[in-house]
Image 1 (cartoon, rainbow, N blue to C red):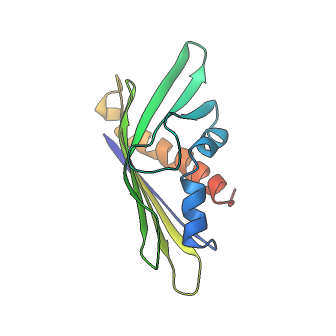
Image 2 (cartoon, rainbow, N blue to C red):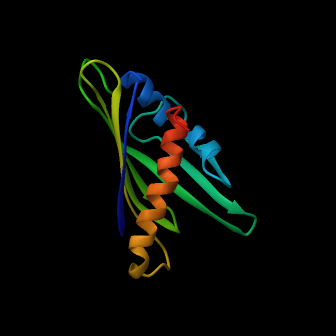
Image 3 (tube, rainbow, N blue to C red):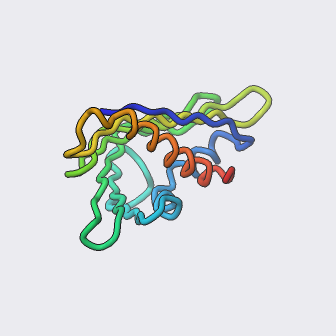
Length: 146
């Protein structure tokens, strides 16, 4: 499994940063060749399931996920959302954390551990670097930084 982390500081209020980061369909609009489909009725909560389908035609795979922790930032308390990935190709988890900062704005930390079926562990460092780049761009786009 490869582990990577993306950290950002943004001028957005914690609630707005949270709303943008947990807009699952928006993720699909920011990641090339990806479409995200929410499988459960809203609003987001523990048990929300969605799938990010990436690729073209037969060269596609599904990244199936479920929200297993849902704690939006409220009353000065940080927010945390944990996703479990249970697809046939991609497995692992992601943790999205949003913390308000003194003087305004938010600190965002996206931590992810993933494995890709059939990819030898020797590729974990390259997968972590690619994850940081790909998710860094997605987070920047979601937060209006890109």
